[in-house]
Length: 158
Ligand SMILES: [Zn+2]
Image (cartoon, rainbow, N blue to C red):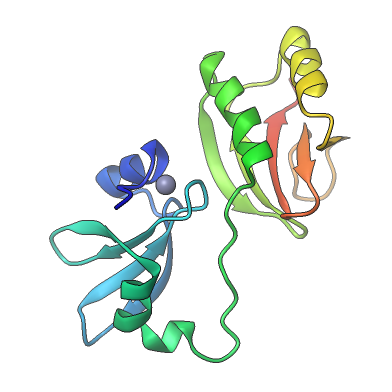
């Protein structure tokens, strides 16, 4: 069975709340259900420990969450994860995961270098490159949007 990825394992260890994202609570099981937007793993988090469970197990422990108009939590697409891997390899780090109005976004801590931008644009022709200046409550940023999965990666503009 999958044991999650570096992002959700780190999130479980540090107790950072957004990754893996807490999506449900079972009073009966004294547990929370968390979902990783990077690898799609489900975590059952008890009072003392957390571990990865299959979706089938998650459904049996948290039946009310999966009933009715259950909306599957988003997982970053492979194309977005490829950009993320390149950015991490180049020394970048994740600042936060946020839900924007149109997409789930992994926000990186540092701006893109010119070389990195060119490299990523060439490698990510299937993604939509975006750049927006400071508007309302969004920081000025640029990045890559996967319209099909409604997931994206953004970098602050320096
Ligand atoms: Zn994960």
